[in-house]
Image 1 (tube, one colour):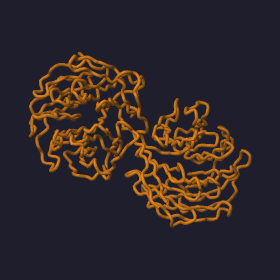
Image 2 (cartoon, rainbow, N blue to C red):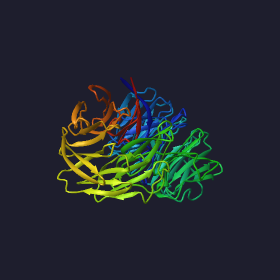
Image 3 (cartoon, rainbow, N blue to C red):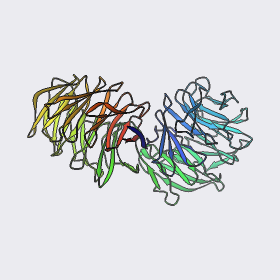
Image 4 (cartoon, rainbow, N blue to C red):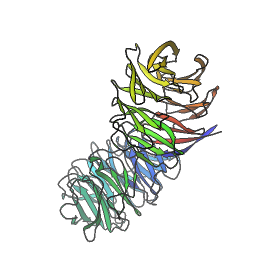
Length: 606
């Protein structure tokens, strides 16, 4: 049995307040790219649901840029490594790797012949380097700054010129190749965040934290004037991007606006108001063909509409922080995927189109540990903010009243028929019915880690850190210890009853999954070995004949209940990150998610 990757719903850019985010454009105009954690995400600009993720950097990646030829991408990380890799093949083969300096790489620029690369950032001895792409040998020196260099660009027409801007409030100008320092420009009063040459090479602009955009002659470096008078924006400017015909540019600012400037007449043609919340600060922008993109502090990618500046054509949403939990549910004939992240966000995705959004209103304020949908179309979630929430999936909004406060932090929540839910908390079990606590069990004498309610609603199984599973019967609104103990091979990490209630699967830290037969007095049906590290999540297929598991070894296995040797192995399902959540959309499709903040769908083929 084989498998193939069906969909990748990618993460958003990783954002930091007060730090510019670079979006790279594809010279052919089809894709754009950005970074999150150790990943570089490439997305189709016309349909951003189509995405590809590059995961070969061992450290956090800060910036990635296409070569002007479009065949290669150069990406730089916090350790000062730059990787140049192929864009045309699915494998993204590494062409070259260099370490121009030790420290964070903040920006990258190519010459128009795709032969030379300039990189700048937070080096220890030097803040920049410019070298040949195929040998790494130096073609000039980047000097003239006394502090970190934030930004670099190279004129895309001959004769080549190079400009940089840094935390010393200066820009530096170079001629080449080999690139030689000519002079510094001290026209800004605060950090310089972005310098960019126009596509035709006649001009370049610098934008800074002082809210000023200054325009210079591309060939000589002489100052021509400022864009938009004394101040272009009320807040700091983090990014600028030129129109393809070099007549206009857009600027993204911390004042929560993006402005479209006509360079010839030096006026703002349009001001895009992106909101009033601090998360609406604009930290990056890209003008590619007819698309104008900006990135908010929230990580949302906005497609700006020149005709309606207060409302983007489209906003690409998703997660920018690691995803901790996942579940699926069919609503109005469509499959939806629900994912909860480390920062408390819950997103719902249309499984087919990748269209997604978060629930309206105020939700969890901390990591969402576990989620499940009950038979009343409610998404039941538990979080490290010590609450369990009930969210109506048809209304798609949080309700302040459908919130159950826990005494201690919940680790896991499980649902069953008749409005029952079980929250497994630190040293405590809480039984809920119809959104209310009905019974609490304390002083357990063991540390509970995971719980599962039988679909029939009569039994609760709780797995402990001592490697034992205790069965409780639910009588009315109470939990009663049956005195029956099942043995796992190690501390329990997750557990789930099959949909028909026939089996109980238990995963543990000793890399094993044990399946018990319920009707046979919980006799062991089979032990399933294969994971190389602890198993963290499992889920049953709709037909109850198979189940899938995800582990710290980044592996996903699909097991057959009746034959422990018959299995499908999906290695490296989320490279560099373990699988944090798994679910089945249908008999042939599983969904996985991970700390890389992306959601993937896999098709199993018979």
